[in-house]
Picture: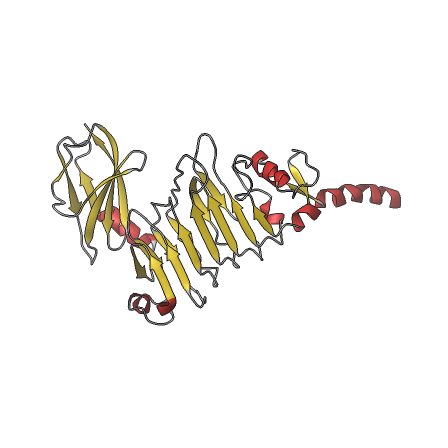
Length: 309
């Protein structure tokens, strides 16, 4: 009876010492960096190896030696991680990925380089202080498509530096207690920054007088879906398909001001801005095809797909 219990218990102990790493690119980087000491692509790393890693830096590895990562399953077992620097994309297709970061109690800095992300959820990382997203290594320019970054659960977050994130519309910085905050981004549309006191933030009053923001933005305490729904319900572009010109119909105002219409091609490349004469937006200079028209208001935005014949 005792021997049987011991035999049954041994496999449980073995399993507990292993971290599953299903993504081949992730494991290859762990081996190249010397973190996965068995040096074998077998879909796993020992828990002991995982606990030794505090700085997971794959970006500074010699160019050409890194492998792109399609998912980060298993990273939640690296309990002592303080910084993560990696590439998250599906090379060579560059299909945008949905990334959900798990809770890691010691993680302070994320550096993503040359990525293609559809969503990036970092709400579980309460200790997060820095997020950097750039394109410094790959020859092909990458593009990130996420619209929101939520740091509401990260009270000490203080540094944001974004490139190739043109569709960002909302940054949540509620509950922030950092002594100073630096934000840098370059987006197609103004970014709504959600804070506890938007009046004080707009007037550069404490505690927001120590914030530095480079990028088109405005402050609000309600960058919410209710505003987005109002914009979606009350603004319309017609006709669709279109031949000569388009018009913007605004059913209700309710304090919402139409500011501009951004015209992008089907891949998301910006073509031009329209800031007046919204009732007749001439499109005769555009080739036939599918375009994205972004209606920009002071409270939110709406994107419509328009066919031009």
